[in-house]
Image (cartoon, rainbow, N blue to C red; front, side):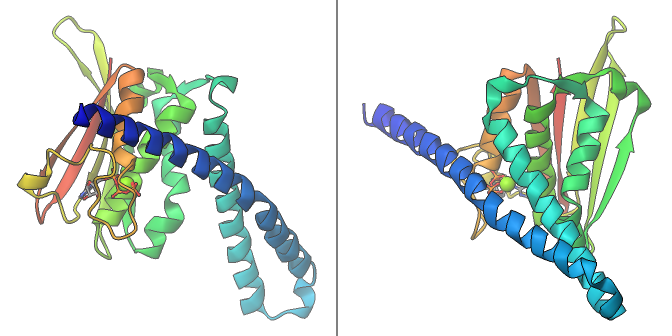
Length: 232
Ligand SMILES: Nc1ncnc2c1ncn2[C@@H]1O[C@H](COP(=O)(O)OP(=O)(O)OP(=O)(O)O)[C@@H](O)[C@H]1O
Ligand SMILES: [Mg+2]
């Protein structure tokens, strides 16, 4: 009984959190538009400004564009039933790499794409898979020290009947996961980060289950981690 209550409590908390995140994304839109407008306005006077300042305005515009993209992606994701579009796995993986570029650069982490051409034929739910891959790459970058390395791979393996099975792997050479923590990482609200919510992997697992895909991982503490998604 107590367990059932705590499950329900967790579910309510998750639901509330979802609503909070959506309203937060909403609230970010207006001030963000103001920032973008002001930056565009500043840029218009570029002839009167020195090169360094123009360069820094350009970087700020790029960063604002990325925030806009992230906020819009989140709001699109929330408008769930509106679009159920499918896209090739490689396209989604590339999009996720693009969206995490700033984070990777700020930590000096190198992100490497190794996409097999044949994985193009794997079509997955665009919004949902993007969310999953973003979470995995974000975790991988966060696990790395400065000068870490994250590799995103897509590949195909044939089963004994010659039927192709598609995979996406996110590998890092970061801190790794301790043996005793391995069973907990998909639990909701489990986090070892001071500013983490512990929802990333939990959400990934739920989305993948719903999409008939599976996720597994291997990790060695102090050496690195690889998460692998297989599509059925
Ligand atoms: N690539 C990784 N390397 C090492 N540890 C990892 C990795 N991915 C996940 N973890 C561990 O699993 C925990 C849970 O991850 P999860 O993504 O669910 O939450 P989080 O990253 O802590 O917070 P957030 O909600 O912001 O994603 C992390 O706090 C971390 O301890
Ligand atoms: Mg995370």
